[in-house]
Picture 1 (cartoon, rainbow, N blue to C red):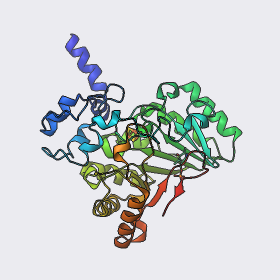
Picture 2: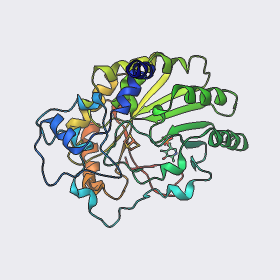
Picture 3: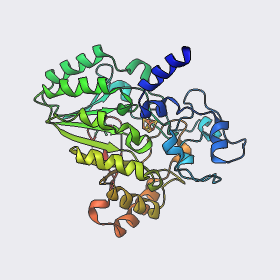
Picture 4: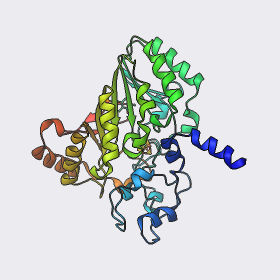
Length: 334
Ligand SMILES: *Cc1c(COP(=O)(O)O)cnc(C)c1O
Ligand code: SF4
């Protein structure tokens, strides 16, 4: 009887929810999966645990300790080093939090931190120390966000960020999209999400249906750092989003030993275009404590950038950008 009951409960979960619920891994599980031996430079992190979906793991080359996808999720002792110039809140977002769960830093657009949950834990993440627990989505918070939009008609774009907003339930997303339909000053709804890349099964028919009668402009900024992440399931998810009126853009972070090579970035741009996605930003690393080992110098970034510019059509070249605290927009370097 209990088995039957459990099966009923389990069957209510969608494939993507099951994959998401199984994304936490121990260091040993990750290494076993990748067929790699334990090494004393690897660590098992307690606060920012190891997390990656089956789909993401399937894109890792087994037996390769330098695999560019593995390096994005594998914690090493480098994370524990305290490096000068790297802080826990590099963008000083805590001070730009006018009310919990909103970051209103740029004039016409606000960022809504809708959830704390991601389908993957990227070791370079600039929000790894963000107080998500105090910024978790709740109906009460959402109603306050709606009030904030009514009081700020200059805001014409709402950006769902996180964590990862696509980890929210369909019912929650649906409610929010419907509420926004009534705010006439909002013209564009944008999502920043790594989920189309790491958990493409999330982009199912139920998800797409949420936007069926939405009259706002829709943008999905996916976050991919390497062409190896974009397998056929990811491509299918992108094509479906495109068919459902989403404009697709990509934001990458320039990461040492992962994609700090013009050939890697050129391949990424081509693969993105193949998935109907245009490169948008190539971001320099935000100086967050624990991620210094991914940092490269601005001079090196410019050098790589010049090489990609020389080899790609203009529309396949992302903007090289940097985020500085208290600036009213991102700083474009090139
Ligand atoms: C990056 C960012 C945005 C969006 O900026 P765009 O240049 O329009 O992509 C908005 N709010 C915050 C806090 C951001 O960090
Ligand atoms: S917020 Fe983005 S970069 Fe940070 S852990 Fe989540 S998916 Fe990765």
